[in-house]
Length: 105
Image (cartoon, rainbow, N blue to C red; front, side):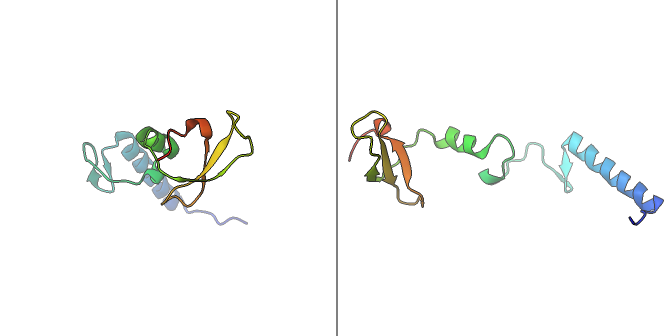
């Protein structure tokens, strides 16, 4: 059997919910601070929209990485061959189409 919420508590909850909706609609004050026109810090992983992967691609998609080829797919000289590359600072091995490898250094 569910416990009944007293009418005064239900009214108080509706009031809080309405107040939160009003703050969300105005967007001006949250946690008693005026956020409009404030420069802020936040983590990319905390972004809700757009997807954090898209942000990283937009920011760093054309950055060049340097790594060591540790293996090749068994496609031989075909265009669909892949290089398995070890990059310092990235824990996982990267798999890159061999045709997209820009140069050897």
